[in-house]
Image 1 (cartoon, one colour):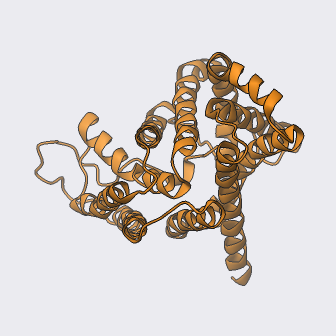
Image 2: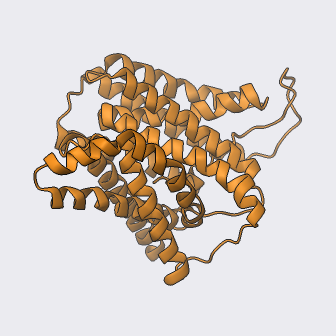
Image 3: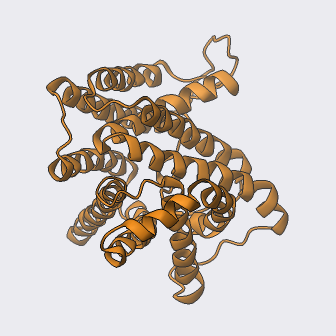
Length: 332
């Protein structure tokens, strides 16, 4: 019992460490190294993760390969990889323009976008407690956005569309990847190479000339390149840490730890970059995180309840829980 608790704590700490390190390094690349090319940074992450997943599965045999039918790789994996690519790129674009604290708070809006998308497009029914749990999330996001001292409309929109991309990926995974039990390592193994191919040409055309100018003008080129590629290595390590923490904790612990992880990332980023945060902005962030924790708790309660008869609803569907599964939502 004691070892189980120790293992869970260590798993959560290393997950937090890699997550904060990736976020801080990416922000450092954009702000301190003046490497303002989010597509190129995303491409480095995809390449590093592709190599890392190959080594983990094929060379070191740390995780068995989940075999996918060749036809499904084109019909199912490729569309998922496209959304996966958009999701990561939008996250890095938003980080380029807005502070880590604001970006992380907006990302917490994902449960709300997932529920609304399923309700509007797939006519899913949700228990009233699910809708009630979304109120503090939406309210916290609004308060944070209104009081954000470093607000940037482009970064804000990128973060919001990133939430939509994350929700779309999660929902599509339930149908496209039905029958495949992917973990975070196998997810990266199949999707990162496709994402690299999708993003390579746009990154080269849109950012290539700027990257060349940066190479010739930046001081301490070697150390800067080391940091950029180091962020890619840490991005893969983050996926591996997600795999480890999933198998070391239960759903409730994972949910609470995930929300505390955001608080840790926000605190560390403020200590390093010292971006201005007003009291109301901090309250908005706290309300959002409390709402996300409450949402996860409601989901856990509903998942343990015995389904009753369908309620009278114009949507005509009985679907108590949203499809979002944070545990399988790998991040690069």
